Image (tube, rainbow, N blue to C red):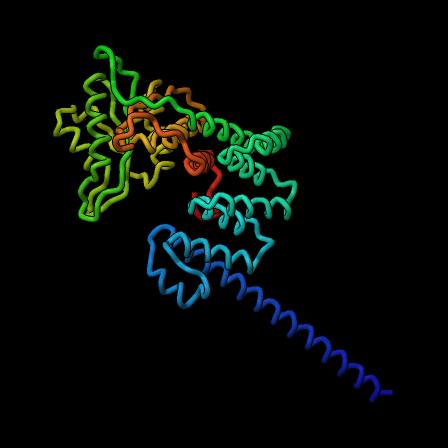
Length: 358
């Protein structure tokens, strides 16, 4: 009897040991998978922000994938992460966001459709579906998703639905190319001038100089207006806004009228950071100065930034023409509409890469 009990005990301990080892192996595999996903996410963000030697990844990591640029690395990274954990919606959203940036709206919408199939009652997906159906001009799909969203009463979904409307209005924006009328002495007005990437040597691109020339003309019409120059990306030790301020002062604009906003790295942060300054100035009128090809997206994000603060301000525009010899306004394409709504939603708080990057 004692021998039988010892045998049973040994068998039990053997089974228990195997179970413990199995759990340990499973935990190790799970940790290894999570480590791979984290590495892929970091890799994607590195290439999104800074670029890199993407040919290295074409040959060593993404075998069979033709890498054409940094966004190809970003997409391939998120796709690989998604394949490791298809249940994680954040990875699926990041993949779709990259496909939008690459201009592949059909592929992005397929990804969002797959997310909806996986989580059919998740309103955030409806926001994206409505956004890009609108960019594609599919009225039936737009109506379907907007009707679904109207039934959702959470504050963030209401805010995103309002952002969709702001983006849609901006797609048909009235674009102005010159200042007219008599000199106006009002002081409740702010001229907001958006920056443009500097050259590697720290010099200004012609696009930025043209924006400043327009701003100078507007400032002469409104001599008491404050001018916010927005742009914080540095090259060779100087930021866009630093050079913009110096240019305007050299052209005779009073230094006390020029306000530097030097923390922004893109159009969304231009709007968010500048709107805080505008609210502090108690300005109720904005003349937004940027390039014609940029004005619709810029107007949408500035208006959304004001909505975030519940601040009532009127956004006007005067643009630097960058459509070549074309005398007429170029209509917004599907891709431009997609980027307008993407950045408006980002401004409203819907990050393009959830938990990683706004």
